[in-house]
Length: 350
Image (tube, rainbow, N blue to C red; front, top):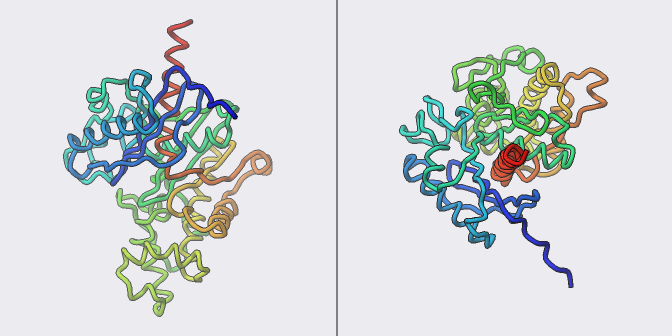
């Protein structure tokens, strides 16, 4: 009979704050996750910060109970929320896209949770956390010697840039906002297709194409004009946009044109990234690839096809999907907290 692996002396907790749920995980000092599934509780974000911070504290208590981990073993908490936010967890004055309550504008969520739970809190936005997990999961023990760029396609377009195993946050914490990078529309749009606009006010940025919002506002209205007898033409546009992926999975001609334009946009983004950071890996995540394997492979292939790399870069770089995406935020947040604790211990013991 095999003996259970002994527990490390201390742990960190990762909390992924979303529009409806908080997902939590525990990572021990040796880098082992103590839970291999989603552990969720309601996030209460639409009720405002006071309720939401209480819900995060409840998620912390719950994951400790689920993993039979004493609170005294917790050295730090990693937290991610929808952005944009500063590197220190102060949400943008324009508010988070998924939070839906005016009191979130300019709210210091990191400090509020830290005061509530009495533990150090390490903050990242949700896309950065997912990017960090993808990087460490893919590269494993050599993660600190590798670099990557991740694009997370959802309602908007989030992203993360990881260098040497660490997220690049930038001077104000706004690095990795890949959705608002302007990309060339040549080779992406049809000759008569209007230039798409993003909700941020920009035209021709990545999010204006590669996001659910981009499908709703720009791509689907155009392609339904070209396919007026399509079944989705009789459906409300917001609902039709959510249904389009299923049609693409089933090989629908019009829907595939929509998603090829999204893949092309990501290819143009990665082409720009290749000239800035020349990363070891390009990751794609989000709802667009939470699909049947054949469609995921087709979509990632199209992204790669439309990424222009030099021969040397083609030989060195990898294209891959963000793994375990439903758990990636919490796990990435835990990794960030673990790295912070380890760095602190190195300083205090040197």
